[in-house]
Image 1 (tube, rainbow, N blue to C red):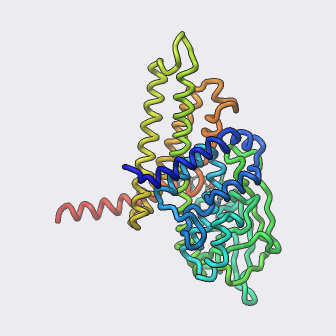
Image 2: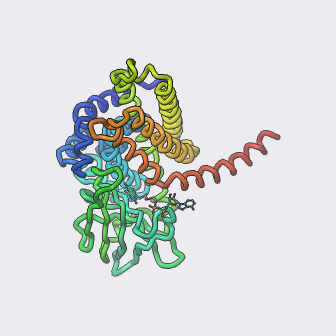
Length: 386
Ligand SMILES: Cc1cc2nc3c(=O)[nH]c(=O)nc-3n(C[C@H](O)[C@H](O)[C@H](O)COP(=O)(O)OP(=O)(O)OC[C@H]3O[C@@H](n4cnc5c(N)ncnc54)[C@H](O)[C@@H]3O)c2cc1C
């Protein structure tokens, strides 16, 4: 697929910034387990927090392809940085799709510039994949809402100004999605340290101790929290993660081609050995296949094709698994050096594993994809006979 000049320019500009301002530092951020404020400010200054928001709200208004390419470049530099954009964008997109005009005017302009940062809080200590059974409760009280519960693994929890929180309503009445602002009484966060990867993503535990919020902070309807708001946000999250895997594979391939050209064993560069060539070939195939799938779903999203939801799940599933294979081979090609922090491949490897778990684990994607394929094949069989 040919990219337009504009799409190419967006990718090239992002790549140059990533090479200069992110790549040289991302191992250090992971080691220190924090992303410096200046980096967030520089990221915001480039408009990237509002990259997928329309210009009318102060965003860059990127099309899906450009936004995907941008996500890939960011992940090549730092998956932690991409994960911050991912959850910020999930909250922003939920407001854009399901917010009232007043809510859009209240939240989107500052989310677009990055003056305010967003997070997505669904997972809890006891509940992850089985999200409909979350324990956080949202109830109506004195003209407002009461939010009570504990969230865990909330990326950007260290810095977020506004949390999109999912909670269950009274028995049998579904769930709701609400915006809880940082300064709400009863909200506190605690960073989760020493994770396998995503160490600079500000992943936190978020306690919502009987937080009172105005009814105006309800996104969508009471009862529609999962069906509409969370599923929309998660679809955007998967899109970012799918492209993130493409970026990880891109980074791994580059690192391996460079390393295998310079490192000599048995009197020749590693790339001259056939078993290394086999790994490079498989890595390249995984990268190209994941990129093609991500581009296909980008086009479908641009066209408003309802199949894009399933394509996005497929792209996320394939890309996160493929990036783990690729990153594993990248460490292998680097040998002992692949296990140290002089090279980026060990970081890619750790982050790739996490991409298989977030925004619906690989198993959840398999369930979703297999259900959809059974239905679509049934339809296709009938149509073939017509
Ligand atoms: C670094 C990091 C960042 C994260 N950021 C966020 C965030 O910003 N916001 C947020 O809300 N969450 C976030 N998460 C949480 C993440 O989305 C969950 O970890 C994920 O949904 C899985 O939930 P769980 O960990 O509770 O695992 P569980 O649901 O307990 O599952 C454990 C294992 O069992 C498998 N499994 C579960 N049910 C089935 C089944 N029916 N069939 C087959 N296998 C099954 C799962 O695939 C998984 O492998 C983050 C997690 C990590 C590690």
